[in-house]
Structures are given as C-alpha cells and as structure tokens.
Amino acid sequence: QVQLVESGGGSVQVGESLTLSCAASGSTFNAKNVGWYRQSPGKQREWVAAIFKFDSRSYADSVEGRFTIARDNAKNTVSLQMNNLSPEDTAVYYCNMVSESGSPILSWGKGTLVTVSS
Image (tube, rainbow, N blue to C red; front, side):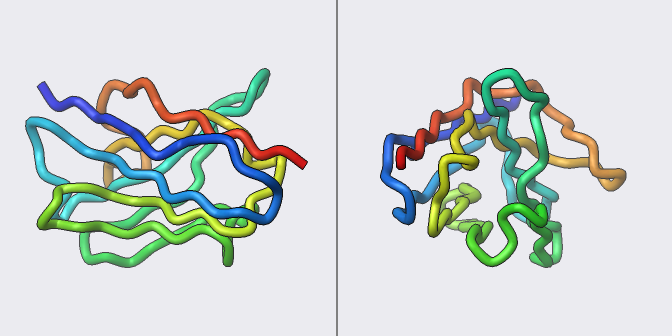
C-alpha cells in the first residue's frame, strides 16, 4: 500500500519562506501526476499546485508566482517551495497522486502544518 508522508512545515513570519517535501513509500513519483493541497481551519481542502507526468506545472491563482512545485526522482520526493508567505497560507498541507481527470488517488497522509504569523 502506498503511503504519503509530508514534512517541512513550521511557524514563520509574514514574507518568509518554507519548503515542504512529500515522500511516497511503495510507489514512485516518476512520470506521475502529483499535487499539493491545503486545508485551513474551518475550510474545505483546496488544490494548491500540481506537477504532471511530463513535468508541466500548474498553480492555484492564490499561490501563482510565490510557490514552486518540483520533483526529485533520485529522492522520490515532490517539493513545494513557498515564498513570501502570508497568514492566508496558514493550513495543513497535503500531497497526493492525481488522476488524469484531476482527482486525488490515494488515501491522505497526515499532512504538515504551516503557520504564518504577522
């Protein structure tokens, strides 16, 4: 069974940066669609960014230009570099593999908490 493990969250100040990492045991991210999602308190989980099997990328409007998703095949990880963070980015961040239709495929991991303070 594939398990996803997110890491790299923490507490930062407005304008600072963080890099999140997603690791998968039991599968490879190579040539797969992988997405990052987040869930803020009291809100639905929302899609943030995706990297597709031929390494094209897509971002939600709210993070475009500030976040960068990348894949490291040697480490079998997908990262999310987050710059110029704002309090609105405070959330638990999750990763998942994504189907061709854009739906998350696997069971959700525990996520990693990002807290941005002003």
